[in-house]
Amino acid sequence: MTASQATEASSNGRTPHPVSAGPVVQLPGAFGNFVTQAWTDLVTGAEHLAVSSPNPPKDGKAPLVRLHSECLTGDVFGSYRCDCGEQLAYALELIEENGGTLLYLRGQEGRGIGLANKIKAYALQEAGFDTVEANEQLGLPVDARCYNAAAQILAEMGMHEIRLLSNNPDKQNRLAKAGVTVVEMVPTEVPSREQNIRYLQTKKDRMDHLLTLDAQTAGVPGSGTNTFEHEQD
Image (spheres, one colour):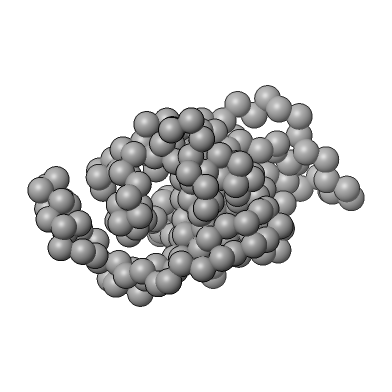
């Protein structure tokens, strides 16, 4: 963090969250050619990754930004219990086309409760609890994530006004408190699946997510009748 950035944050009535940046390198991949930069939260030690389009936003608009919470089961293993992997892919496609940045926030597995606790919550969901009730049964917060480091990273990247790729208005509110202005919410709803429709309905009904759930359900070859829930966005 530079002295001028610290001064600006202090003048805005907030204490800057200490982060440090690594070098910017090329990241060509399946979704296009990106540049990437690792950031370290100097309070928690968590290492986050900014994946950015090398091109400026189209038409002079504020950059698209996706705050993507780490989801090992969805992002890596393609779990149908959640829509995380599909939202990740969709966001990268939009950012490659329109300009912007995806912040991959590590240490936020299961809305911040961790991988092992997420799997425990899965077991409770299979016993009939919804995602909110499962966390409560474990004595854990419904959403334990913190966006202070993400907001500081965006500020140090010069992104003080953004178009947020999310269905979750709570992210907008938390970013605003941390000094980042969201000028537009850009939906990232992807087609639901039989295995996650109950979770998505819970997000809409109990967590105020901006979902329509009226799109055609995505087909799942060989899917059974069980419905599950997940812990993200």
